[in-house]
Length: 154
Image (cartoon, rainbow, N blue to C red; front, side, top):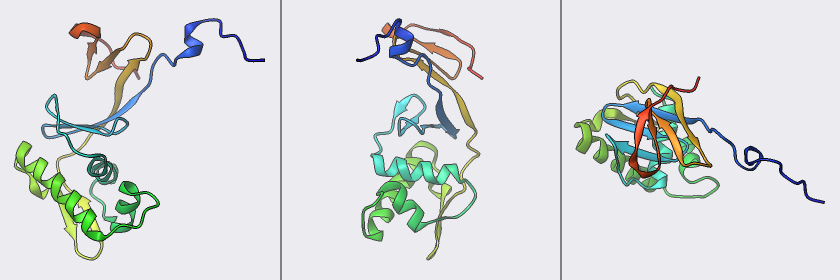
């Protein structure tokens, strides 16, 4: 027999921490797989964002082509040119937003490395699934566009 749930906190998790990287004018929500320029989404596809996540998580260290291919196309056999196209897309977005095509360094026959500005990792964002409110960068985002200050979750 199914368990009878006594209150709504058993139905929905109250808070969920999200990993967010900020660098230059960009903010990467690693869990939602979205890149924002200032407050606007960039419109990057899932594959490009997956590659960016893999590079930023290992900022300053080389990431092999194989590791990047597995991050963006898990379990699929794809041509190296697909990786090249996605990296070029990332560089184009960085150039438009910050004039920084050199944030991703090519390491011939080895892979790529993120060498852009430091990307502090924060777990401050949180969302209450039941009410649709959340805290992002110290501002409470509510339904109806209302915002108030909130404290980051530690």
